[in-house]
Length: 376
Image 1 (cartoon, one colour):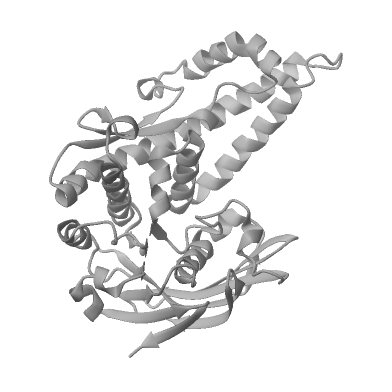
Image 2 (spheres, helix red, strand yellow):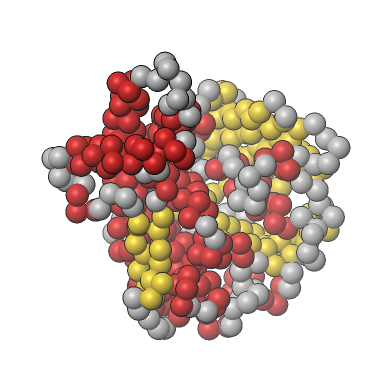
């Protein structure tokens, strides 16, 4: 039987985070439930845990929105440990000058050195956008999740984006007499190498998700065959072709005139996508919102299985108001997939939406205007 490290967040301290002035909370190793009306701060506490782990918000691309109004900074700190009693302190300080990330009181110069220490999986109503939204939303999801699995992925992605930026800037100078086609081809060659590395990692991740996805979906919904497919400009079968670099270079050469006209790079993994299919039909176009929601829940549940198998870690689970729209059968089917000894954080506006067995194992907090009171 696979032995996994059980990860849990012991404590979190927040200063000037969203509507929270200052709070320090000690958490249950199993289940923590936050109950309150809308706009009181329930989601903010889950967002702060996600931010502490990922260094990004799942709700906004403008991180300065995390800073409480009229304040100059926000700080999130947390102590996490595993069942081997390894304990670490993480901290993020954010202001208008940038972000400072700290591990055990040592400032990390690179975000990539900080990531993948605290692993979390977030379930929230906005997850529907992963299916219904633009390809950029799906790529962002893929990039964030992969940055938790592989320490090198974020660095690889940054290198790709830097080369892409340089290439795009150079395309805008084509009419300049100083345009150097040889230098431009060097950029293209570098971009091709990074493309292949990133696409290989993404295909591999999707394959691992598919190992569990349909089984999970069948168990929570009792119908249909669910799969996920990565849609890339590089065919999966071509990844082992010895001539792959030359094949891609020929495609870039064919697009050169159009890229000059449009002043941007038209080919690459920055335009890739993924799609989910239920019984062969595109979930985005042919499925109800209920089926779409179950598809995304299944994707996240399958991801937990991949964490356990690949990283031998049980990640922390964040459930932001996901039970209110599910019937009792589906709630219970989903709960069965949360492994024993996994730490879970749940928000709800109505404690009646939460399974009685879960409540017995839980610490319950009442949230009101950014304050937290634990129910005894």
